Image (cartoon, rainbow, N blue to C red):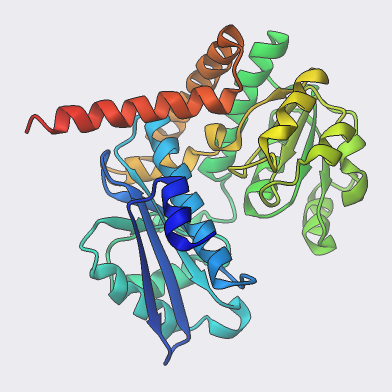
Length: 355
């Protein structure tokens, strides 16, 4: 599939390429839609197998960001910044300062945030040249290792909505929750779930990530990655990479609810009938992983951490509403969510034509 076919498939308006060989920068910037506001860019630096794979990832990220914002009715469009390269080889001050110069050429159409392979130090280098950044408040940096990030807090609200719908239970206390993948979000999610008094089971391909949690919670249950799908639990939460739930792994699941931090939890829609047969409620990742969008919208509007925490429960009400609609309409929750988000974007576009 070529680039234009990928753009048509994801309905992206623009994809831009920036390259500066002197610093090793290869950047792909996708803009899906800016009807609701400037594009909030999920960013990542990754050594993709091919340029086409990097482009496809950029387009999908931008696509999901539009609809994540629309579901929460926040004034952000959807965008992405994908940096193609080996983080161990290309990262430098000049690399990120060059990216900042490229960002300025878009005049605020897109705002960059932190992501996989890109940390606060890197963003501060971008900031030397550009102000089109989010998530760089002094408090955010100072408390990076102390506070549970907004994405994880929002996911917990989403899980509570799923539990309310399936068990009519108001909280996660005493429930067993599997976390597959202990990256930044998975790590934060474990901490938040322990505060909620849930029983947590973890797995990851990299033992060092598990050890960090074991040092804090010595008795936490750890399962080998290949065996995690069979673990009996209330919620199976995939926080690793997209598409790990395929027809094979879905048949192994022993949970009541499937969700995650990744946008595309299931490899294909062919998995949905398997989940339905097994009585597993599927809660799409893009429906509950949008806590950062709430944080960044507050950051643009008189930043207040208290305000963020108060508004994160929007994810609970949006998720619960979509799950109820999906049940009544006999549709997959992601179908209902996309329809609702698209209608909202279309309605906003229509009234903006009145100006």
